[in-house]
Length: 319
Ligand SMILES: [Zn+2]
Image (cartoon, rainbow, N blue to C red):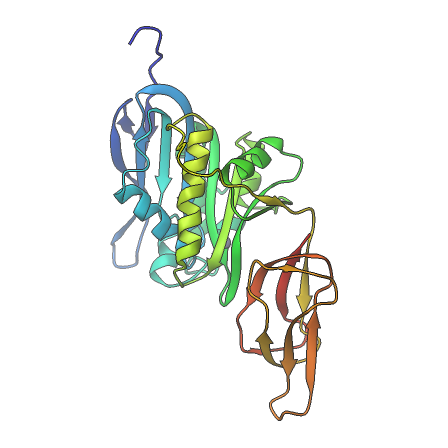
């Protein structure tokens, strides 16, 4: 086509993916004690015309499986066959954690605290290093899919980097119900991408080891919104644009005493300061302690643990 520039070629681990091509590439990480090779499958969808390259990944924490299912559905339904630019999809980054139902790798290390990693470091550090060497140098934008921890249910929300307007724009385009700025943690994937100049968004929805249909659907829609916003796929004009509520600050409400925790408000709800969110009771019907909202805002996360200790985080609120 006259005047149209062809997209660049993407190359991972010696495998070349030319414009207009979709390939699954294996990124070799390590061997199990039995000799079985552990590869990270990476899908590369290279569009014909020049455009940005986005990385969409899940399973950096192996037990956070909503993102894994989100990307599986998007691959199955051909959502990544972009016209412009390219999409690099990593459905499960921490294969070890995924098969062990664990956030971390077998030695207990968190891959999301091991970036940028080293070639001869711990297993987590080697995964980070391989990712940093083979994938990240080719990426312009990143979307990293996570969930809350065990029993901690996050209402769908995106987190962008403080003082990084480009990542904030990504959050606006994604259109999750809530979004807020988040500091860079040492060793995190997002700190490394920030240093490399790759605006990155973290999507947090649902809880670990449990599928959540709402979280998955909003995730699929959000990634499509970002691709449309970057001009990689046509905009869906028949759909209402998703908008996000920007929150400035967030705060945890903790258990004032140990006991059984009965939440009385739904995740995502708007709350007023002083309003009752739930209660912590003893087991003998003698003492009930009301849990009250500490600010005017929204509920971002609810802890669904039935028995709690003093100081346990119960509700995450944002305003
Ligand atoms: Zn996570």
